[in-house]
Image (cartoon, rainbow, N blue to C red; front, side, top):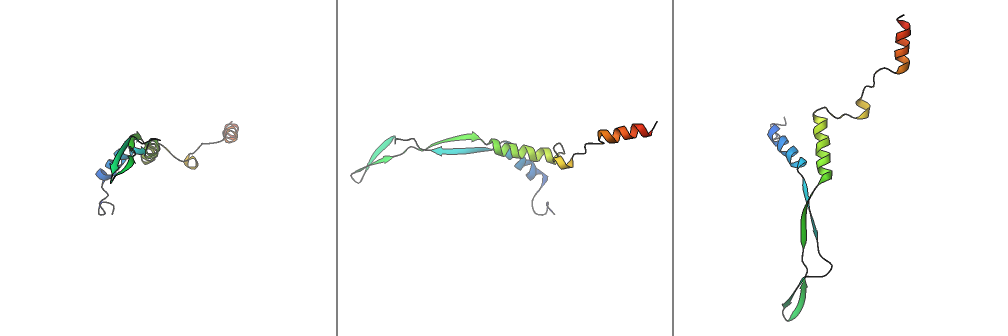
Amino acid sequence: MMEHAGVTLELMAQRIYEGLHATKTKFWQPKRPRLAEVVDGNVTETPELISRTLISFSERREMLELCLRLRGLLVDKHEVDPGPTLAELLEESNGTD
């Protein structure tokens, strides 16, 4: 069904790769404009727009968590079987004497 909808293993692998290498772009203007120009006899200040590409740590963390869950290497606390309790082990050992 997913293959029929175009969701192939190759597409999922590509999206995982993109998520693990996610970036974000931040834009801002300095407090004082850098340039001034004359338009129709009026002096207008042209603010400089600065941008930086940064690592998107939150997106990468979420994708890593998803990958670990898909591989079965990360489970929720309620899925963990802690095994027998100390009382159960003592009860077993006393019952087998």
